[in-house]
Amino acid sequence: MLFSPIFATLAVFASAISAVVTPRSPTGQCETKLQRKAWHTLSVAEKKSYIDAELCLMKLPATLGLTGAKNRFEELQSAHQVQAAITHGVGAFLPFHRLHMYAHEQLLRNECGYKGAQPYWDETRDAGKFYKSDVLDPVTGFGGNGVGANGCIVDGPFANFTNNLGPGYRVGDSLNCINRFVNDAISVMAGQEYLDFCLKKKTYVDFWLCAENAPHRSGHGGVGGKMTDPIASPGDPIFYLHHTWLDKLFWQWQSLDLATRLTEMGGGNVQTGFGFDSMRPPPGAAPQLPAGDPANTTTLSHSLNMFGVIPNATIADVMDIRGALLCFEYI
Ligand SMILES: *[C@@H]1O[C@H](CO)[C@@H](O)[C@H](O)[C@H]1NC(C)=O
Ligand SMILES: *[C@@H]1O[C@H](CO)[C@@H](O)[C@H](O)[C@H]1NC(C)=O
Ligand SMILES: *[C@@H]1O[C@H](CO)[C@@H](O)[C@H](O)[C@H]1NC(C)=O
Ligand SMILES: [Cu+2]
Image 1 (cartoon, rainbow, N blue to C red):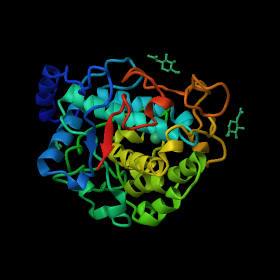
Image 2 (cartoon, protein in one colour; image 1 turned 30 degrees about the horizontal axis):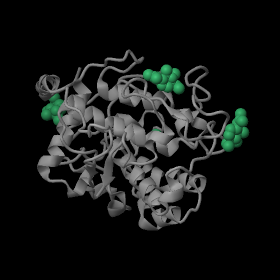
Image 3 (tube, rainbow, N blue to C red; image 1 turned 120 degrees about the horizontal axis):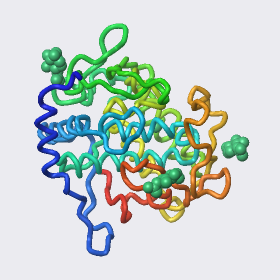
């Protein structure tokens, strides 16, 4: 194993405080919302506390028996990997990733002593110039671009993290580095004009299709390497900042018409025609239709499966970020 000694210290620290939970009112309603902020607005100390918690998660032993996953960070990655074919190019794309970001925030807080909220990457600020983003800072960020033919990152706090999942589905699992090939011809799709184009969409289906396209592709393709793996990309911790930014865009769109958009859902449960053919799972590797929906149309009762990392939730549970389950806001 290539873990650095700092991991061991953090793991001991984390186990001592594993009982910390998100504060709730006695009725279970949302009272004090966690404030999710942009990475570049965090203090150096806040950035360090987030990264230290992520390093802790990468060291905490796996508990769920999910094939291939060797630590808690990878268990959350596994929940994404196994279900990639039913969470991309489908109506559940935005709700699933909203819950997945929440699960990450919960793990950091409940198991690694993190006191803050899940930050997001304001990619619009860095559109077309990811190479000089604060997020890729080797000292206060996630490390910089990859080096050499395989693009493994060699600086920053995650330089030595070896990931056991991917490439692709479980069948591809092998020990691999976090690699990146920053591509600023692709990162331009985080630009405000692309967001505005999506924000004008009138229906959930049109908005989701728009958001999953350019804004979503900006962070994956702009960072490159592991982040371009549509199945195992949560192996690069930048994934969580990218998808939280995309979730902020989803909430921004919902906020333009909450009366309608807290309950509007749609799309299919089986992906077709989205150019995701490379995401076809090996036979038997992913469920074909998720629980909760009466047919191949995504509804509010659709079950989002977190494989025990956190309890499953329905799409209805995650439609309102200010609701009893999620209880956060974007600043
Ligand atoms: C990664 O490993 C190298 C070589 O052992 C070491 O010099 C470096 O400090 C390590 N980096 C981190 C972030 O642990
Ligand atoms: C499922 O939904 C998609 C998208 O709406 C559609 O194209 C596909 O034909 C449907 N598949 C089945 C088996 O009904
Ligand atoms: C979560 O959802 C999946 C798929 O619907 C189901 O198989 C599983 O049993 C659920 N897990 C829990 C803990 O309810
Ligand atoms: Cu995804």
